[in-house]
Picture 1 (cartoon, one colour):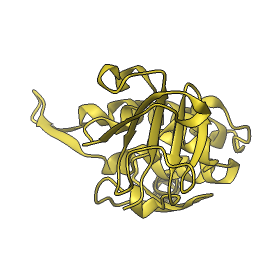
Picture 2 (tube, one colour):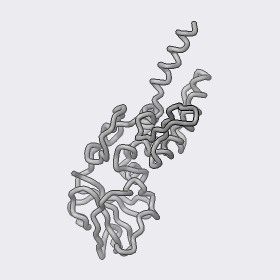
Picture 3 (cartoon, one colour):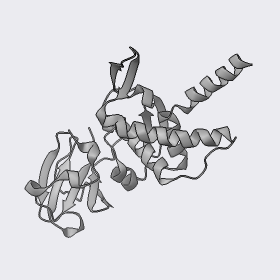
Picture 4 (cartoon, helix red, strand yellow):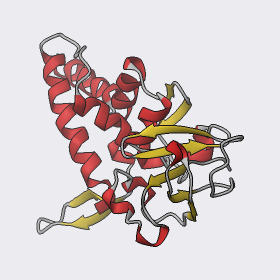
Length: 214
């Protein structure tokens, strides 16, 4: 399996705290550990990786890209299939790296409970609550556009954030990797967000209600 390498300049391997970086999507992975005296940028530092590649700095067979305070590398550019973290159902969305499956919020792993009225309640598991809340926020804004007969055209920061978090649900990928590889464009962001918000299903339900009420 192809994966990513991460180089943390001027940090000793034993002192590395990944939680200080925007790499929450790596939490829980059994990362390979390494260290080099002269890595990308000719600086010493710690290396982490997942996949089957060597956890070291071998510039003759690796590609490295500056990503904020760190560098992200790979030997063979990972495909969506390489990055898949779990079996998932949802909608296939095209990106500049290939097709990713995006799960609507209703398909996210959830906790099921009975409230005091004996009604069933569904709540996304803790690790999915942030993306579910963001999807709900963007959905409310999107539905407001639809109610006015318009489509939101401008890509805003929260739309990009939602698209990245939607991919991270099913894949080992986050903001730094998306930026480094140039995975997203306007069209893919719209498609991914439309999928996680389940816009098509909502529009069908709305149309059905209008027909039944006529």
